[in-house]
Image 1 (cartoon, rainbow, N blue to C red):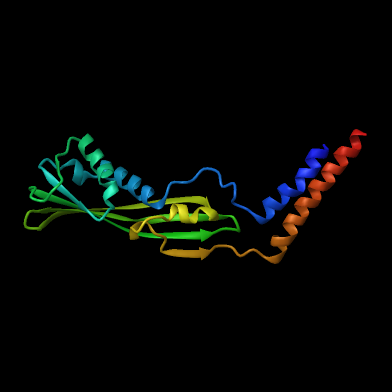
Image 2 (image 1 turned 60 degrees about the vertical axis):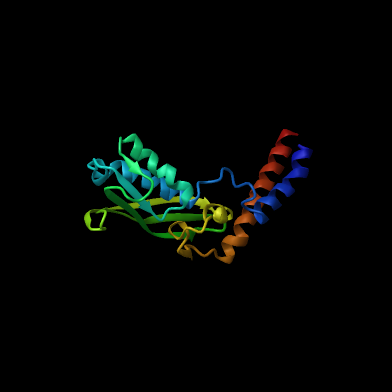
Length: 196
């Protein structure tokens, strides 16, 4: 019991003044979320399903994600040519509007929303078909993890808007921790005295 009472103030100080030190698991970054949503879209696309000829995939995605994008196409028995000169060209574009909304001192809502556009064109760049797919991904993350999830130079994955969703009042900044500390101290005191 004495050990708990001697360690408790340090734990409380860490909890109040250093939130987010123990952030838990790192969430996936914005780039990976968009790539995951793209893979789902490619698997569901009727334009892609109906492609029978050899085609080249053209996209502005970072190079490290190209193999991830091609894998579902190959699993669907599609013939993808890496260099130009294929009979048809499938162009994939993503337009996103990502936001980071602070909900409190420690938490924020991450919104990754936008639209995928597919263009199917022949060798002379005449577009024969298009498809558009909206996407949305919303979760809650730690404010301390903002730089971890907002990595890379790819503009489609960066946060375009940052806002404070809820301002904390002085009462909630000061009174809440005081009430928590007071209630915990009274509980510990009462439990210790009742045992005697």
